[in-house]
Every structure is written in structure tokens, then in C-alpha cells.
Length: 460
Ligand SMILES: Cc1cc2nc3c(=O)[nH]c(=O)nc-3n(C[C@H](O)[C@H](O)[C@H](O)COP(=O)(O)OP(=O)(O)OC[C@H]3O[C@@H](n4cnc5c(N)ncnc54)[C@H](O)[C@@H]3O)c2cc1C
Image (tube, rainbow, N blue to C red):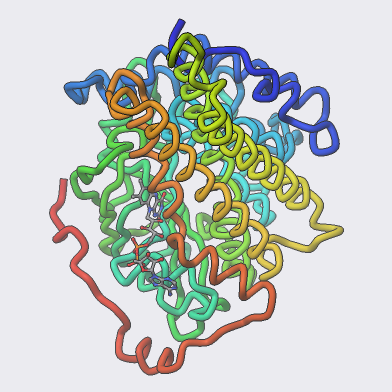
């Protein structure tokens, strides 16, 4: 038996997903996904990183093979409306799926989310024409990778800071006749890269880049928008993927360069709908994006708890498993307590997100506060759990073979994407009694704001 595969009733889908938030059908789907994770993904966890020697070929093959299996299982189709042939399942279900996949590899859950995310933007923009256009690729059995490009050299967290009202976006959109022209640079989006890296016997290709843009930085929310850029658009190029602490292949990040990229005007999601783009960026990109990542943090925390439970159940001190000693038991109980609270809060927020008629749309500061609290609490829970699992297991926790070290590397960025750890807390406060403004903000933006060199602008 692999460590972490023991049976713990409280961690089984039927017990951990309360029926007040999800249907019997959704729980059944979660049971199937959990089985797929335990049987197929868990034994391959190391291979998502190319094994001990970080073999790139093995990493890409593992990513593509299992992403294609997720597509065949229908996991990327759950958010597409039924009228286009999708499953139209709930936000709760999506977060249950991310949680289960993240128990094995959070990068795989990110790939699945990179399809749900743009689908949610197109639904919010009421763009049935675009949903219809993408449906055959999203709903077919062939696997396509997607990407949402938000972050810029001038700071990801600034773009995600409500005080700036999207006035720090520097990637521009202009309309000329039937074409939209995009200029600028994005940094960090994943999964990105040269198109040929996404074609093999498992993957059909890269679907493209849903890019956050502005028509005029000085007009902030009213001028912000989203435009779809196909990977083969003329003038679009990428940097080599960055080398990182983890998620090197499961979520390849690059710089994206838009040099007078021309796309059909219909690819502007909020075309002729002034102000809608800004709302979608706040609500669906940032606010719901944070809620989506919180479930993945819970999944990783569950995994390390299971590993720690199995290990401490098998390690004796004077003939008694250490997990039965009060010191160890109190730590394991504390891990389980935090996970239980984090998971239930994520599910509750997901349920509320699915009922905007009661709670309002996701761009409301109050909803953003809730979803940021979910990510913040889940992030702290995961940090506590990986740290404690490692301490409980001593050197074994630190060893490659026992997997905790991989979760320790992976969870950190999931706690930080979409604005950083501090922004979560600031956004909770803003939902409670905001909005805040930075003194000197207007002058700073007028002068061009922060401009960094990023990774130097090398092209692939
Ligand atoms: C693996 C990975 C995947 C990613 N995926 C994507 C993706 O799919 N799409 C995409 O567009 N980007 C993606 N990113 C980028 C990521 O979302 C940003 O890096 C993140 O939002 C932080 O922005 P930054 O790195 O520019 O940090 P900065 O904005 O420079 O912030 C640095 C630090 O200062 C704090 N800070 C800065 N300004 C403020 C402020 N105004 N308020 C409060 N705190 C502040 C931040 O919290 C942070 O701790 C990814 C990054 C990684 C590593």
C-alpha cells in the first residue's frame, strides 16, 4: 500500500461533501473522480514532475495523458451550458472536482480550470455566439489546453487591487473596422508556450489566450475588457517557460508578447457592452478565481493529512503507534479540524456563488471578501498541514519518496496566485468596511506606475 491510501471515513467523498450543498449526482461524480485519483493518479504523482531526475519528456507525457483522461471523463465540460451540449453543473461540483484532483497533482486541477474559467467569462458576457464556436473543441473527446492572461510586469497584485479599479492594465485594445488590435506584454500566465508544445498523441493543441486588456487605462473599470487571442495569431509570441520551484510542466508559465496582434472583433468578449468587461474581470477572473484555488489548497492539505495518518499509524514508540500518543494525536486532530472547516467554508461559498439571485454577483466587494477568506483560510490550513506532516514524520517527511515535499513546494504558489497572500486579507477588510484608496495613487498611475523588466523579454 502506498502511504496516504489508508481508509478514513471522514475523508471519503460520501462523508466530506454535505448534501446541503450538493446533489446525490454531484456526490456520485466526486466518488468517481476520487477513485480515478486514488487508482490512476496517485501512483504517478512523481511523474508529473518527470520523476527524481526531472525528465521533461516524462513530465509532459504524464500531464498530457492524464489531462486527456480528465477530458474523456467529462471534467472539462461541467460548466458549459446544456443548450450547447455541456453538463451545466454547479460551482460546488467544480470545486469538488478541483479538490479531488489536487490530492494527486494540483497542476492537473489547474489545467481543468483553465477551460472552466474562460467558459464562465463567455457565459457572463452573454456571448452565445462564442460559446457555440468553442463548444465543439470544449465538448469533444479531444483535449485542448487553455490560458487566461492577467498579470503584467507592472504588478499582478496591483491589477487585483480594487483601489486601482483596473487602471494599471497596460495591455491595450483598439478596434479598427472588423478587427481588434492587441498590444502589450503579459507575464506569468499558464499554461502557455509555443503551440507545438501542446500537440502529441494525447493533446490536440492549445485553445488560446483569454487576455485582460484596456481600451484606455485612465478609464479603469469602464474601459477594461477581455479578448480571445488564438495561439497562431500574427504578432503573438511567447518566451521560454520559466524555471520554478514546482509546477514546472503541469502549469508552464511564460511571458506573452502582443505586437499589433489582430483578431476578429467578435473575439472581444464585452464588445458593445460598456462596463461589463470590468465586472467580469473583478467577479469571474479574480473573485471566483480565488474561490477556485481555495478548493485545491484543501485537496493538498487532505493528501498530507492522509500521508501523516498512515505514517504515524505504522511508526511505533514502545510498541504503540505514535498517532495514539497524545502529542501526535492532538496535532493530527488539529490538522483534520482545520481541513474540515476550510472545506466546508469553500463549499458554502461555492453554493452562495451559485445563487447570485440571493447573494448578488461575484464582483460585489462582499462576495470577493468571502471568496478571499476561503482562499486565505484554506492557504493557512494547507501551510499548517504540510509543515506539521513533515515535522511528525521527521526525515521521512523531507524525503522525496514520501511525497510531502512535493505538496510543500506546490501549495505555496496556490496560496499566492491572483494577488498574493496580503491581498486576500485586504479584500476581506474592504468587503467589510471598504473601499480603501492609496494616497498618491493617481499621481503614481499618471507617471506610468511600476514598470519592471520581468524576465528580460527573451522570445522562445
Ligand atoms: C505557477 C503560477 C501560475 C500562475 N498563473 C497565472 C495565470 O494563469 N494567469 C496570470 O495572469 N497570472 C498567473 N500567475 C501570476 C500570479 O497570479 C501573480 O504573480 C500574482 O498575482 C502576484 O503578482 P506579482 O507576482 O506581479 O507580484 P506583485 O504584484 O509584484 O506583488 C509582490 C508582493 O507585494 C504584494 N503587493 C503588491 N501590490 C499590492 C497591493 N496593491 N496590495 C496588496 N499587496 C500588494 C503582493 O501581495 C505580493 O506579496 C501565475 C504565477 C505562478 C507562479
